[in-house]
Image (cartoon, rainbow, N blue to C red; front, side, top):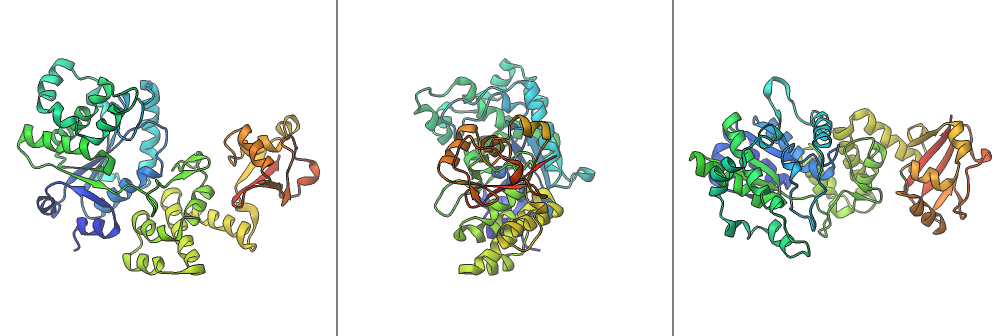
Amino acid sequence: MEHILDILKERGFIAQMTFEDELYEQLKSPTTFYVGFDPTADSLHIGHYIPIMAMAHMQRAGHRPIALMGGGTAMIGDPSGKTDMRKMLTVETIDQNVECIKKQMSRFLDFSDNKALIVNNGDWLRHLNFIDFMRDIGSQFSVNRMLTAECYKARMATENGLSFLEFTYMLMQSYDFLELFHRYGCRLEMGGNDQWSNMLGGADLVRKKENEKAFACTFQLLLTHDGRKMGKTEAGALWLDPVKTSPYNFYQYWRNVDDKDVEKCLALLTFLPMDEVHRLGALKDAEINEAKKVLAYEVTKLVHGEDEARNAAAAAEALFGGGASASNVPTLEVTSDEWTQDARISTLLVRSGLCKSQSDARKQIEQNAVSVNDVKITDPAAVLSKDQLGEDGAMLKKGKKGFCRIVVL
């Protein structure tokens, strides 16, 4: 049987790891590992999808994942990759976000019979005694070494600097590893490569305090071929929640990735065999569109289910292939009262998610980027008329690939 680290390397997941030879030996036996997720929103986004897929590969190889919800660390905020202090969230908001994320995680991991666990670090971090914690854990960390971490150096160079609250984040995350080792025998932390410094702190803490083997392994961030972060759309982040990002828009994002990114995305974001990944990735010119359809379908199926993937593919065919029913096209249903009160095209653009705001909608109209039933809209104050509403509603379009069917009930 192929070693799990070789599988993850071949598919492009691995960025860095500690004690590689030892970790290879450790993972020849079933091993409990964890990945942390800070609940700063009520949904995961595509940036979380790489570690989730890696967790799924690990579980398939016989290892036990722990999805650690940051109910405690979210009260501080990770300074990594941030130019300013994160917004402080209330306990109620954090707990609500944790519950939402728990439901999403069950789509990707098998939690039956303790094959995977969901744990909240708020269970121990919210009740720590400061003096005891600093004597026991803080004494194990060198400030000189902490200040060499990229997440701290970058923040210290900004105008507002680094707060002491955020400076303690590394200690909190490291303590998570120690606590999970005590509770569940966890020996490995995995996560995004931007977490390398924090993860080293946790593995070192377990080794220092318990004289036991502990490891850290990071994954590549999801970047385009030219180094830009993937998952950013005109409407914002690419969310895994279908309310925040519709399955159709999710599908379309992957359908439209750059040709040079197709093979990498197929390897990282799907379970397709690597022979098939290489075959699809080698397609050229017009044929690469078939590979993009496979990518979009497979990723949407994993995130939203096969029915939604099938519907999204059918909607795309209806809009761009001209051969299918428009019933699966993204639809905004408006009551007759709502339509009577405000039938402005700009309002419908915002309500449909095609534009972020009224000002954005007006700008798109002024730039001749908006049409109804393929007729250009040039007046920002234009309204949707009865004449434009057919039996199937009116087709509202923004740009080349933004569509929404407007139906008045």
